[in-house]
Image 1 (cartoon, rainbow, N blue to C red):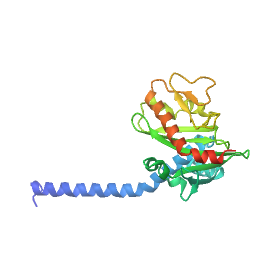
Image 2: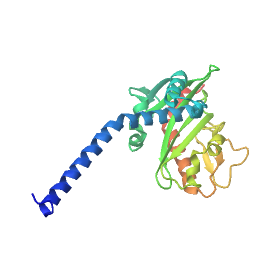
Image 3: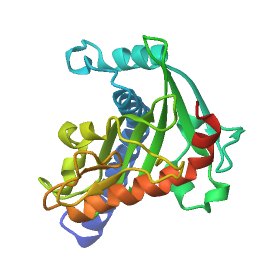
Image 4: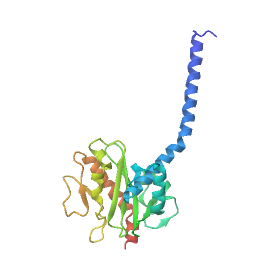
Length: 240
């Protein structure tokens, strides 16, 4: 075959495309278990951070082993509830919250993680997911065993504006959620609001918004309101 001819060039190009496609497929299949493990560790890390654990991750010689050990020590139980607050069958860790949020509230599977702390107290971790300015936002909110007081919160995003909405994943934004209340004095669920211009000092339901990140701040408010509403019956039934 004439190597300078069009036929040879065409066959060679097809062969190279097939070779590259095969190599990419092999690479994707080979990397999939590692990618799945990374996602699992990241999820466990965020759950732990919401209950003030995994503090020494950066110093750990083996991050994955450290997170697994912390998770198995503190997250002693996980289960799934429905919007009526009843425990139902299901694997909490494997639930895709994006898919669940697309369903009517009464059809959703709602994950709950139970943390047994060193002092004998119990905290409950509730995943949340919503919409920011440019894409999804998500996080984990832990509550004390009164099912009303926020113990901790962690949020993350996909594609929010650097220096503005992206700040929801910073500790200075997340820390003020600690101690806020989900229910008012009458027992009505009001959740926690991110307040533009700053929350009043005595506002037990408000935290400061991000300057210049109004839409993402509002997204966090709506996310918490909508997700906590789905958990309302579970929280109310479990109150101490």
